[in-house]
Image 1 (cartoon, rainbow, N blue to C red):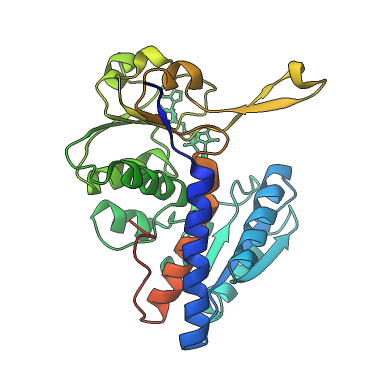
Image 2 (image 1 turned 90 degrees about the vertical axis):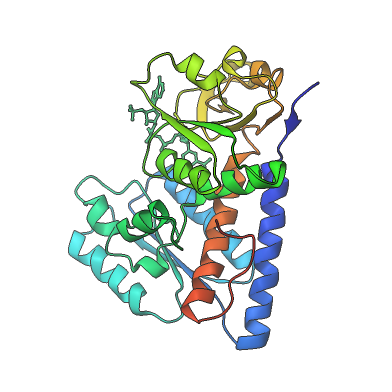
Length: 300
Ligand code: NAP
């Protein structure tokens, strides 16, 4: 039987709809408009595209969007001053500093200067600690999106074997924490893992967050397993015309889809969920800041 395609694009539209409804209610019942500030340092083209997309989607769900675009040579002190001002601005409930930062800026220092309650990327050390100890936190957007899709597909994840390939702070590690929080038996694999194919073959759930195009072939997948492909890799596609490219994930889609029970495509899987979860986190942060009940189903 062909794998069920987990449609992240459609799911993200549903999440954005839920966020928009909640925003409408916050405005009507409490006169509060959730506000998201995005700080971009420098002119990295990919970052500019992400920031534009975040701003557009923030406005579309009825929230306030603020963008701070700073020169590539902005000093650490000047960047910290911007964050400090956003930390104390009552109209701003979420702050995101677009990564990567130019090399002269200390990313850890900058991220840890964001007020944890406004850290909608969930990268602040306090939020990492809260997530790791099973407490209420701001949850990193990409793994949160993966978790939402897994819960939607399976209902309960309890007792399932999950293998996360990749141990980055932004995807692999928080993904593993979230799966553990939902009572999966979790293995984190990485570049030094021995017998990776055998490790992956055990899994009921495979989350690939490696950054290597089409690295996971179908014969690593247990029949019926659910495959969540976080990877976004751009390959040359001369068949589409000169200079053209195509996006692929970290799993070989066709061979994995032939074996898996369910799979996320690239594009249209995890990618769209990331910004949807950023908006969800901003509403959640806004509700917490105002002592209001937070929306259900929009966080871990
Ligand atoms: P990263 O920081 O580069 O981490 C990659 C991880 O993969 C590392 O832990 C690395 O292991 C592991 N790895 C590398 N080669 C491996 C191999 N041959 N076998 C097993 N493990 C291997 O990447 P990331 O930021 O987590 O991102 C991963 C992918 O997700 C990228 O394609 C990225 O573009 C994508 N991404 C997508 C979204 C989205 O919104 N969809 C968001 C974020 C990232 P070591 O630790 O041992 O080096």
